[in-house]
Length: 130
Image (cartoon, rainbow, N blue to C red; front, side, top):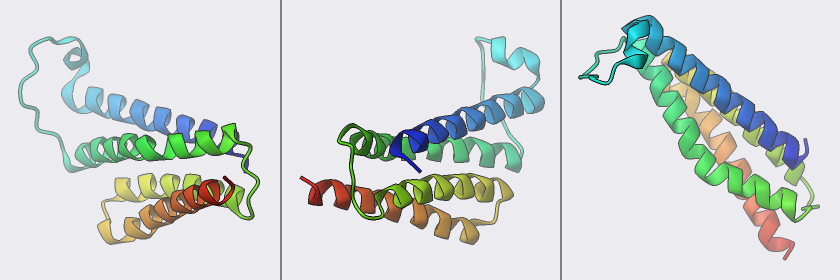
């Protein structure tokens, strides 16, 4: 998978997760909640909280994932296994999101590790190709 493709897919995943969070909020809080300026403390069901936290984690992973993938794309990184690492990064993020939604905490850790190690490998490849 090319680095540009990984960036595009990562963006699509993030957009889908945002849409799911918005729709869950409307479903659990009512349609008027989105237009209310007087939002107080909101109690959400466990699934809605997991969806919210999964999206927050996706945004946090974008803080390191997007610059790494962009740097690899902009430098035309040609390093053994780097594009495979980009694919594994995306797969890890998809798996992490899906597993986060299920609420099974110990299963999502390997998906998180997969994406983090993949990003680390791309950093290594960037440094070694300088």
